[in-house]
Image (cartoon, rainbow, N blue to C red; front, side, top):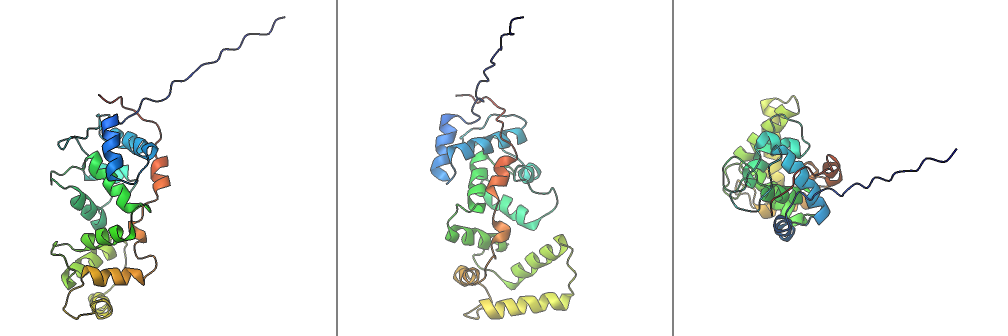
Length: 216
């Protein structure tokens, strides 16, 4: 009885999600590798229901809810996520493009220079965008954090935290925290930016199969 012949099936490599133009543009603006960008592109494209990714300024994007999904974050209200989205939505159309998304991922990854992460963290806390942290900024951020994490603090305890923070950080006693003062605080506070550090390996492993054939 003769042995049955075996059949070898060759699987074609997945079609790239990103066109060479999009990939090149993303590489020049981020610290991400081509493979990382390709995986993120597949994830981003799925969030756009399979739409092709463009490098044009008016390219399609994703809203806040899908932004949370793409980053692997819980779909719940979060001041930090709202602020990140707002800061990255440069044209204020309520959508994040792939270019803006890769910028976010770079800033939140360990690949970003510390100075960039500090400046980004400062901008998140600077709710009114005046270039300094007022007691109102800190109060509103603190209240949001307390609410989101179900922490029980009295109004007096919140006020005391703010007063002690400014006494420690506001070195020139002008009633506001500057970027330099904030940077000094981060420098002597281990783990202060941990909440703004994305596990890039986890994000990349959320999906590894590109799904869209881009137009050239």
